[in-house]
Image (cartoon, rainbow, N blue to C red):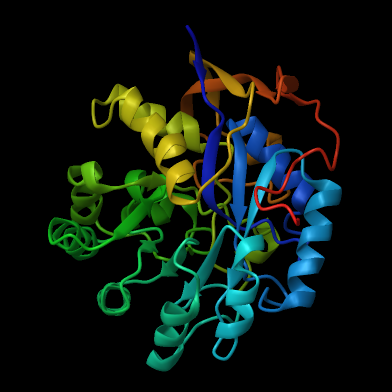
Length: 354
C-alpha cells in the first residue's frame, strides 16, 4: 500500500559541513534526508570550528546554498560569551543550541551565567534548544521559567527526564521535547551486537525501563528527531570513538514499526514528524510537497547501500518495513526509486537572508 504523507521535518541533524566533510556534507546528508522522506532538516552548530559568530554562520550558509538538495534550517551555537552576537543573528537561524552536557565538539557551557545570559537575551520568537540530561534539564526548565520563555529539550532518553518534562508541562511551563528512534528502540543490551565503539552516542543508550518510560509518555513528546550524527567506520572502531549515529535513512521505517506495534498512530507520527516541528520551529509552508511511502515494502538496513557518507548504521541487518518510493518538493520529483534526482543547491534556507 502506498501512503502519501507530508514531507517530514527533522529538527536535529549534524551534517558536518563545513569542517568535517569526510563524515558528511550538505549534499550527501540531504540526499540521505530525501531517501528517508525528509524535505526539511535543521543542522546543529558543533562544527569545526563551531558556529558561534558571523564568519562561521556565513560559511555554513554558503556550503548549504551550494550543496543542499532539500530545505534546511541552521541552528546557531551558544558560547560562553556570545549572547549578544547570537541574538543579533536570530532572524537568520532556526534556533539557538545550548550544550549543557558533554557531546561531540567544544560547545559545552559550564557556567550558569552563560545559560542565564542566553535565556535573557535571545529573541523569544526563535526557539532555544538544549542538550540537557538529568539535572541540567531541571536547570534549563527553571531558568526558562524565570525568564518567561519557551525551551526545547533535545533527545530525551531517561525515565526521570521524561517524567520531569511531563510534570513541567502539567504545571504550565512552556517546554517542548524530542525523542530519537534509537532511544525508543535500542537499549544498552544492544551494544554487544552493535559493537562497543559504534554504540557510543550522546545521550548514551539506556535501560529497558527507560525505553518503556519513553514509550509510555509519548503523548507529551512533541517531536521525533533522528540526531543524525555521522562518523566514519574507521573513527567509530578506533580507540577513541566519537559519539553519534547516522539515522535519516532508517527513521521512518522505525517510526512505522511503532505504528504497527500500536504504540503510536499514523496521525501521531505525522504530528511528531511534521505538524509539531513545523509549529515549534516556524517552518514556512512547502507548496506542492509530499512523500510517497510503500508501507508494506521490506528491506534490510545496510549502511553500505545508504546515501550517508558514514556508510554504517546501528540497525545493520535489521529487517525494515516501509520504504520511501517518491519525494516531491515544490512540484518537482526530487527522489524516486532509490535515486536522488534533485541537483545540488536546489534546497532552500527556511530563514533566507532578506
